Image 1: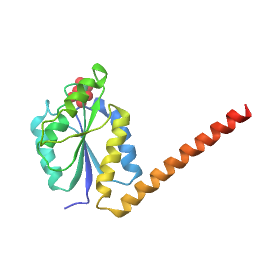
Image 2: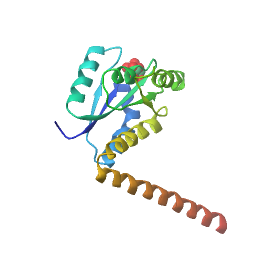
Image 3: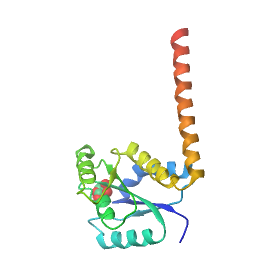
Image 4: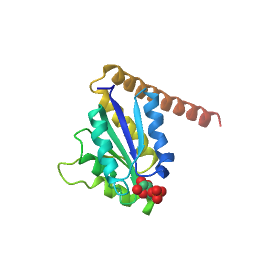
Length: 168
Ligand code: RP5
């Protein structure tokens, strides 16, 4: 079996600009990932085969992005016991259609649904990394360090703001 990896599926190549936020975070943590355009509706059989194959090759978590009647994450979750994270894409109705289609899964077939759009794409990658970090102490430490660096950056921004306000 290969090194654990994250599989990112997108319903269309039009989802790529949003999902680049996921790629960026996974690269930051040196997490291996694959990306595939595969649709629950337009290529249901190929989606099914890819999920089974990725699962058997050591996929640790799936990230699924789709817009409109977004059934991709649910269709993937139906075919694996690996964690599935759904990213609703705003391609109509401000993404609310995709959010509800992704999040409202029947009991027993979970999809961990994140926010609509780029913030969700980012958090999907963080969540997948955290899932892998449970059994990878080195990766877990990288997450701890990154949170500390983020906190430091916010404190520095506040310090700069206070100085500006006091000297203005
Ligand atoms: C969904 O429909 C895709 O995930 C995409 O967000 C949306 C529109 O797809 P395209 O018409 O741009 O291919 O399946």
